[in-house]
Length: 239
Image (cartoon, rainbow, N blue to C red; front, side, top):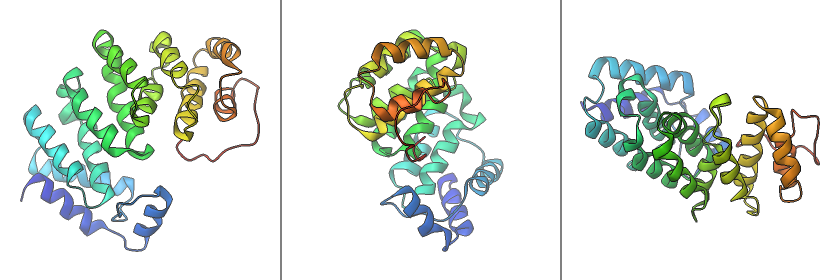
């Protein structure tokens, strides 16, 4: 049995018919769920890789991820593809050459549960390791017609803390201040809120400079830990 087939068979065996429609409804997903929750899914990935072995080359890794992702019949298959990207066996391939794959996942994933981990857990570390190569790509995404590329560019440095490139963060945010899209506005607020934990002075100065351009949602999220606020609390979905 191939690695992909073993992973799919494992998901089918772990499926919960009662949880599946609940998970699909929560995520507003057109693609059905198996009903496999995260801890069990990640344990499955570890067990299957231990039995079958991980892809041995970059091309094999990409092909495996793409097969799971592009041919997915259930949403957990895409989550498993992300698990393979984040697995230690793929560490050697986490470099700028992985960006075309991750760009494909962002554009075709097109929802926050898929886009956000690609941006923050996969592209973000590559950006910090190779800023000269990756920052221009992120700037391009921040102005791209595709809203999910733009959200990825806005949130890509979440978790970077003191290693945050503030010029890149400012560029990505300001490029999207006028966009009315909920996910962009929420992403802007999330990115600023998280960086405020590291440098509240920088975020406060940025907010003061752009207060009349920031949406109420972005402003409220950005200033959550700065003793400010704006309007009623929004849903916690999509951060």
